[in-house]
Length: 222
Image (tube, rainbow, N blue to C red; front, top):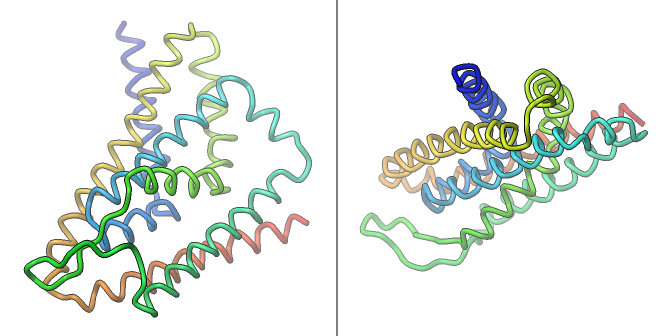
């Protein structure tokens, strides 16, 4: 039992490790959270955590080593990722400059527009961005594959499933913390409405930079 608890701890830390670096998913969660509220950031993050669970489960099932042997797969992932992130980035910048965005449902006492998005939409957004993020795919192909080989392949299905749940919990915890930070920051930013208007174009430009980086990496592999 102590050995298995150690495995759960390592799995939990692995989930934290993949979620913590600031990337396209984190930037999207921050942007949505500052514009809409902490719950928006939370559900985008939960989408990312579910995708991490899917990737580690696929690695355990043996799919990712098979995918790594498919010629040109990483090139396709980079190009698709660049396209998806580029569309999101351009949309964020366009909506911010035009004043459009998510449906308005009211205005709070400070005069800041309050908006709300369906949690399912935000969850799917988090899943979509994480699925097409080549950095995440590469991480699970390398580090995830090594972790599975070293810790899960000789365990029962139930024992491996527990470790995969611990990975999900680590990722989910990080995004929950991020959502709380974003919610706190939003409560302070509400006193400076002009910062809300800056969130869209700035985050859009950052996502556009990720898209361009992915495009360059993809073209280099052609």
